[in-house]
Length: 328
Image (cartoon, rainbow, N blue to C red; front, top):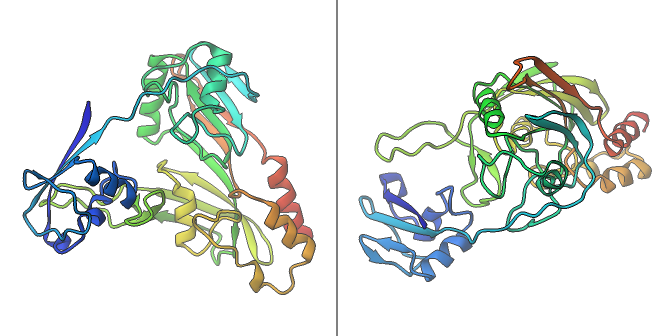
C-alpha cells in the first residue's frame, strides 16, 4: 500500500525546482528523499513519470506522489530500567531519563521506552500502531521527565482527547542562554517543518490557502516565566497549551533565548563571556543535551476521572549545570 499525494502548483511556487517543492510535503523529509523518489519513478508530473530533480515547476501543473509504505518492523520486549511513578490497569506513568528514545523508528529499532514497557507490562494500547503502542504523547530523546503511556485502547482514546482539548497540565524547566527582560510572557507562533532542514521545525505563517488548501503551520502556544536569573543565563518554567514537535526549543530560540546544550536550534555564545571560568566552560561543554525537563504532568484518570498530577525534580546532570552556573 502507498501514500498518494496530489498537488497543483501555486503561483508562489512557480519556477521552483521540483525536488525543492517536494520537500514542503510533510511526508518527504529531505531533498535527498525527494530525489530518491524521483529516481525510483514514484513522482508523476502532469500524468507522466518525472525523473529530473532540477525541473522547474509552473503554475497549474499537477504533481502526483506515490510514497511506498515503509517495511514493517517488529517490536520486541526488552529488559530495561524504568522509573515508574504510577501504574494501574489503564496506564503507566514514568520518569524518562535523557538519552532514551520513546518509541522505535528506522534509526532506533530497539532500546526504547516502548521496548522496555512491553517487557514490563506485556501489552499496551494498539491505537498508535505497531511501532508506537500506548504512546499518547512524546518527549524528545534528550529531554527528561514525566511521560504517560496507555495500556488499553479506551485509556488511549480518553487521554488523547484530553491532550487535544488542552486540559492536560504540562510544565517544563528550561535553562536558556541570556536573561529575559520580562518576568513572564506568552509565545503564540505556529510551527511547521523547516523548508530546507526537514528534520527541524520552524515558526511559519499560519493560514489556510483557499487555492491550495494546505495549512502552513500548526498553532503552538507556550507560556514562560523566569524562576532564577544568572549573569548570562536564566532558569525558566514553561507551560504548554499545545504540544508540537520541538515546541519549547523553537519558541524560546525565537525570542532570543535558546536552550543551553541544544545544537539543533541554538549555538553556544559562551565565548562572548570573558568572565566565565574554565571550570564552568567545561561543565557546559560536557552537558551534551538540551537543558529541558518535563517537570509536571497532570490529567484526569481515564476511568475514575480523578485528577492525577505527577512532579519529578530535575535530574543530576541538570542540577549540576544549574549549580555550576549559580556559583561561578
